[in-house]
Image (cartoon, rainbow, N blue to C red; front, side, top):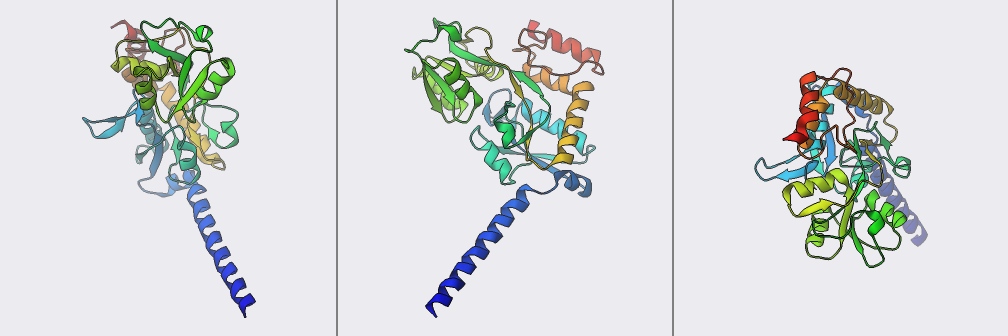
Length: 297
């Protein structure tokens, strides 16, 4: 009798585990392309940053998350749903974005996410939508003018889960790397003297400079960091729709308008290490002129 009770208990636990597992899988494995086609008002949920100036940040004025990544997500949603869909946003960090994608809480990630071979083992990426490059942020009076100036006496601040952390340890193994939870904590740590420099992609650092005078980039970029939209594996049709939509907005001037709005003053498209990946064949000439002259004002 005791044996039968134990077996019954184990069977119940097994059934519960199977139900929970299947629920988790169904959330992450829904055919998103099919959902877009079938729903009258399809909703696409995007994971975006809320602490990264210019890309994704919480605006007190509007009470919403705004930024370049947010506007790109809206444009992609419009294109993929023929203007009938809605874009919703979930705040993510470098550490939480892939787990949230995997468990089906979001359909895609637009969160300053660099395309890497390691990440491609877990997720699929769209074509690149932004060309970033890792750099160093330092106070204006710093003696650091590039990665080659870093010594064993320097502490480099980086963000947990970001590609920049591993890259810094590979390119400057002599330095101490201090990992912080997010960019806000990283910049506060730099301000308080916990580190000598903060490292991440140049455009993110320029966003910090835009609202915090007294800091500068130390030298040129020392990596290439193409950003991509990350989606779950097994979403081939959605992947194809995503790349087609991205190609369209990069060719019809929509991408250029969004780029000029967020980066025209700090990272003009014709500057060295430009982050713009827009095509020019179908772009509006007036938009092109605005992008090219954005840094002159």
